[in-house]
Image 1 (cartoon, rainbow, N blue to C red):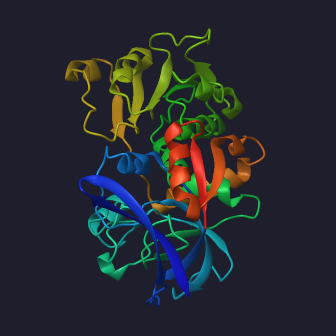
Image 2: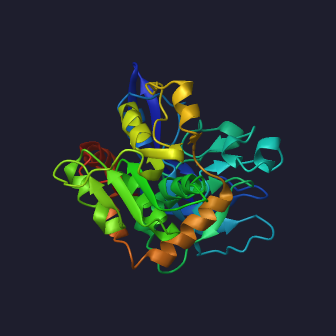
Length: 347
């Protein structure tokens, strides 16, 4: 069997991709061979391909994806050939102290799909911008329900699972009101998740008017250009940052109630220095926590959440046009325009 893969490398100091065909290697004990049904282009890959971020190379980028099981050599696996599945973006040992403490995404032997050099651990198909992918023995898989289309569930194993993790950090004493800072994919998923958790008021702030127009569709109150609502000082129990912009932190501190929780998700980059004193944190008795990626239990919950709410929220507006793998350059060009939250690539 042959597979097609988009190879990322650096040539003369600049990002470059090319397409090549390889013979699919025989999978090993515990591994799963999957056919990529749909992959979505995450912002992290756009940063890599634009030169803002450097990945190891040669590699196969892409970590948001849905597969169809082609072959499994994993014992006691409840998935069979032909099943559609989502998978954890990381392979974990499940034995180290970090895995056992519930942060599998920080496993001491972590292997991340779409972020690993071709040939590492003998893997030749380890990213989603390909026709096939080989999943290692420690990779958690979840069967997708029939009511969840592949193109809508492709980003489920990144953005939605991360937000499921983030919403586990929310206050348990009171779920009255929250502010989400950013109406990208993370933010809109967060709006729906918090609404379903029982928050009476969920605000979502955004400067992009097109994104802001989607906020109400996901159960939240838009705050931004053209909106008349404002968030009063010390009026929300939870603030969740998902926009990646450190300047929003001051506003978040202003609106957060004493004893509230501030969850930081989006500022995963070096230009994220915050202007705050310890006194501000102490006197307001607040909790600040960071969330990066997720553990396998959050992927299970993300699949269940989307299946349960598929007819309640318009997830279809979150994904844009679909391109063939052979049109990868066109797909990246479209994604760079940021006219939609996710562009889909299919073999």
